[in-house]
Length: 326
Image 1 (cartoon, rainbow, N blue to C red):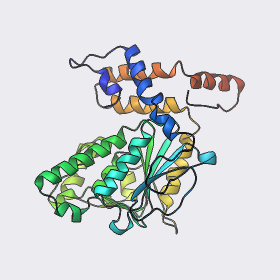
Image 2 (cartoon, rainbow, N blue to C red):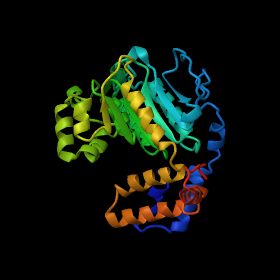
Image 3 (cartoon, helix red, strand yellow):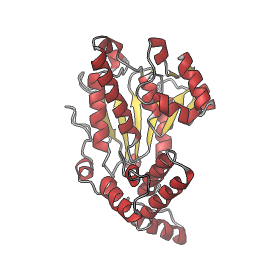
């Protein structure tokens, strides 16, 4: 539960703006965990210590890791999925490592944009690991999917913008992972779909809720009832992705487009961007009157920031602003 979720009491009344400011600032911008992950330190501890801008092939037991970019791209962090043998299927190890990566970023104010990408050719994430799932009894399966749903929520509530770069297959839980991101870029050749009904299931990691909110209830029902697969261009036409790009020879066109989009976010005031995300996400969950109150509260948070003062000064002095996230 994020700070703005707690602005509603049990009786549904909004708490004071002053209390919200204290809560949000405490949770998002002054958390000690941010200090540990800043200053170029690795976001994860999976044997290979990934430092900013560096890349080396991960060990066989590493299925998900994070990588900070450097130079002009400083502030962008990649979440890299590399479970080659199982096409990034959502198994126990994969989910556990993804959860650790996401958790480490959640309070890191140095992270301004997160790009989820795959190193497996032709695959973003193939969905459930059916071999592992077949070994679970009913109780174990329910518990695992509950954890998977929790992971997707964990991704959805990250305070900074998140982007999914779908250069290949994104099926079932793989598409649900992309739906948990703020923005999605797909190669026109990518295949995606919530195909759970073809396996005797329904989307259980948030897909049955997030897809209708993006494409409308009627279209979502059509896609989920039929288990239909569709390509990047169709996804663009229905508003599921922000852009669909022609795939290139290196099979990373969506990733390159996602990085370009992340670069457009980098120059903007980071606290303002985070608060805009919070205002939109929370405002969509309530009536318009309550949503306006949420917007006011988020706006109140940016008024005293140094970044707002810098933005005004840069406008008056006719120069690009230099935001510091303070």
